[in-house]
Length: 174
Image (cartoon, rainbow, N blue to C red; front, side):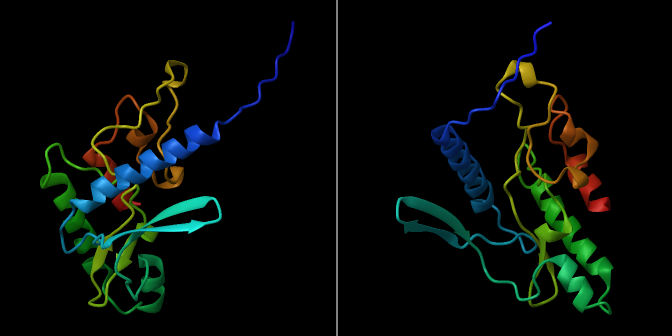
């Protein structure tokens, strides 16, 4: 019996194209969102240094930061109000578009708190209407979505079922 060792060789140009597609998807998803409980996209910027070109998305600065820090520093504030705001943001994503938009990566670090103590959803890199199914038929059984596996709903781990609104609700309950 022979053993073969394969090493993954990555094409830097292909990796750059994938990153560009991911950025474009996030920008397109985020640009159309207009709701009090959704972080507003203010614009984009480009920074060039030597031969490296980087793009960034610009959003308003929220002084309270993400929900974890906010809750540590504001223990007296009712958590139920933040949950209501998160639910309203999700309801907007799920009902204002056809087909519904799925956040796909809902976790405390993707929930920011504004100056009026309202929660706003951020990080729309996974937002979409269908799963990120691999192009390679040999890897059809594998989840290729990005994000933290710990917070994913079970259906997010199985590309055959894809992104569904229930996935956001599962993540909200964690």
